[in-house]
Length: 121
Image (cartoon, rainbow, N blue to C red; front, side):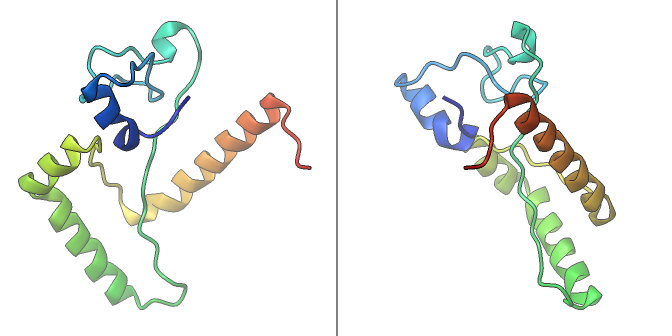
């Protein structure tokens, strides 16, 4: 079973689940003793991420304001602590890098699906 750390972390902490590995390339700070899947010899790198999107045509000034306010909140130590306790690792990227990031993600998932042999029915 795989799921995001935010979902499984409470079960791991309570002893109801035992993690066998994590999917990012680096160990997670919340589970430092759990090896990555890569460390176990399986080439695998999957990260959960969230991006805030706005409707097409949103004025650039509104987008810039939202971006600045979101970054300000995410930089707060209390917010980082709260999100960290829930399993999140806060990272940001410049807005200009998002299209390339999404292009790379789509390319990687296309490769994974093709390699799996899964077909739409």
